[in-house]
Image (cartoon, rainbow over all chains, first blue to last red; front, top):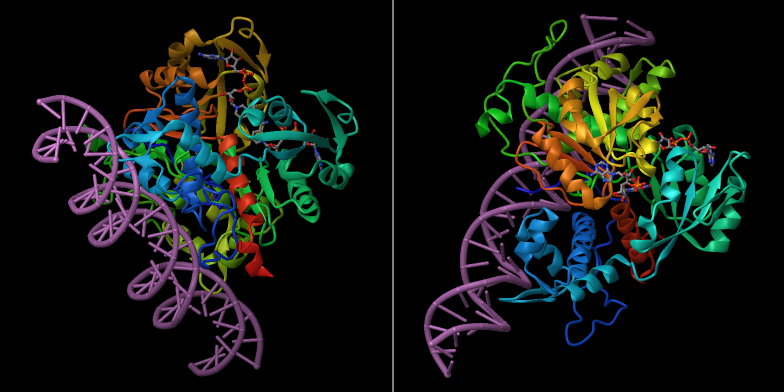
Length: 263
Length: 263
DNA sequence: AGTCACTTGTGAATGCGTTCACAAAATCGC
DNA sequence: GCGATTTTGTGAACGCATTCACAAGTGACT
Ligand SMILES: NC(=O)c1ccc[n+]([C@@H]2O[C@H](COP(=O)([O-])OP(=O)(O)OC[C@H]3O[C@@H](n4cnc5c(N)ncnc54)[C@H](O)[C@@H]3O)[C@@H](O)[C@H]2O)c1
Ligand SMILES: NC(=O)c1ccc[n+]([C@@H]2O[C@H](COP(=O)([O-])OP(=O)(O)OC[C@H]3O[C@@H](n4cnc5c(N)ncnc54)[C@H](O)[C@@H]3O)[C@@H](O)[C@H]2O)c1
């Protein structure tokens, strides 16, 4: 009734939909105890490799949980949370079970505990610094977007190659020239690069980021980025999303299509 | 070497996740001959349900193929195309085989034929009309974005609830009040709704779209949308993408993590 | 015409992810 | 205390997707 679409394969496409991250060898070694000491008796789990699909959903759960917390809800069952997140409840329980046993049978989960656990798992306690490269149309919207700060990130630098744009102040930051990229990355300890340049510049910018040691990239340019092993790229691609919708739209029109079955 | 990440679960998410579309029953009836008559002798396939993951990748192939066509390349092997798209070549061949046999053994695929076939499959020959609801920061960027037109879509209407925004002209269109949504949808034969309102308004707008018969929605607001069966929702969620990157970033730092295996 | 090098298309194998279904906990009411 | 009720956590079944590996075409060259 309320599925949402899974990110598509590997970018949610190659990478995408919106889907998995470009990860190298999957390192299936024995589990290593986590850093964060689980408080109380429950300290198991937070082990090795969380399934990629689970990681993506955890972020969704976190969003839903934040809303619940705001509303003063303190406890939630897997059924309720799953409905709100648009997933199957068994799926949700299995996801959460990867983090350990934080639910109470017969009762449900404590919202605050879950938020804590998920934030810890996703590494959101560290507030990573983000650099945005390409401050055009889209870049301006992103730069002014409050969603970064409220979701565990800190937009620390804006960069553009166009001298006319350098010096402009947006949301408290001054646009710097992209030649300064290496310096900026080191100075500000940038962990994530967001690419919002035209497609033809994207690979170039990506290479520079990688050369400076950035291993996490979010790409808005419609280009497939090649990166070495160990670097994670996720892409947001408007055209691909629309084309997927177009495919299904076409299907709906066809006689014998899925709609006929419904009635 | 050049994987990209798959969309996450239903938001690929999520999934993307970014990932799959919210499809109802999967209708596994017997195959129905397609409308478009395959030219020449090859007319098989274009059958029923293409795997969701394949659909997402087809859009990527199409992008890569367009670039190749521009460069004057007329023929491409699965190995080359796969490398350019960041996928495994066997995967690519299997994807393409779903459309029929359009390759030549020992040679490869004709770029023009492939472009044709994929556009047909994705329904891009019809140039669907898109309505954008919420013309704020992000909405402005989207409205001014050339990528719609060049990728098979026609942005036909801009709507906003803020009277101060109504009447504004952007990219040749005048912003209309969102009360007019039903009229606009019927007049302009809107097939796809793009939601770029704040999260708290998203479900409302979504409901209106659905009530007006729109069955394909692209949602930029950080909210999980509930829709009836038969309606496809895809979401683009910046925070989720960043949080997935954050997770992997954290993993990289951990002793015993995947990087240690590489060297 | 025959060989060689190349590349597609696809069965089979494997892996990943979701869903089912139920036993094991926990609370509540009596 | 105890049984009824609720809900978690998870083994097992299932289905989808990726990858392997190779037989079957195709063109080029001789
Ligand atoms: N605008 C949208 O809504 C939208 C939507 C989806 C995708 N995109 C994609 O996002 C990207 C940006 O879109 P836009 O509309 O903002 O384009 P834009 O042309 O307005 O902005 C691009 C900016 O990148 C800068 N730039 C160019 N080369 C650079 C380099 N090497 N280093 C640093 N900066 C550089 C330019 O100076 C410019 O300011 C494009 O690839 C576009 O396809 C945009
Ligand atoms: N700006 C970004 O870069 C960015 C990035 C990712 C996600 N988002 C999300 O996209 C959405 C829009 O972001 P934004 O920065 O453009 O916000 P914004 O506040 O600048 O724009 C929102 C617009 O929606 C309009 N609106 C509000 N309620 C409406 C309704 N019921 N019907 C029609 N229009 C309505 C408002 O009048 C406003 O013009 C938000 O949900 C935001 O979280 C934005």
